[in-house]
Image 1 (cartoon, rainbow, N blue to C red):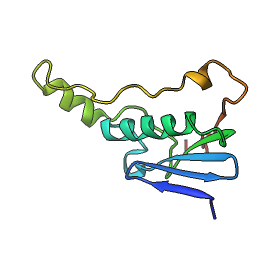
Image 2: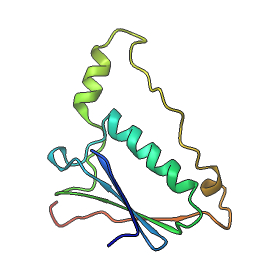
Image 3: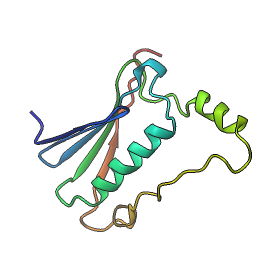
Length: 117
């Protein structure tokens, strides 16, 4: 059983020892990223960037595909909205320590499943 786990609608986070597993959880749309999922992912990445105990991060997706990209339905909603009505409220995640390659930065490993292609 993972040492720590967090379940949200679109992103699942499990931490076992020093390894975090981030799972995209929208298999019904091949894990396409919508605004809510993007916000959840940013919050999870921010949490992981500030967790000195996490040494590696694994990204995976539930269902047949890892991630099909952006959710077209959400893009269509933004295009149909009046100019200036759609914006992102949250700040970008603060991954400065990881991107600077500091000794405590987590290493990221990504696994993409190809057997259903």
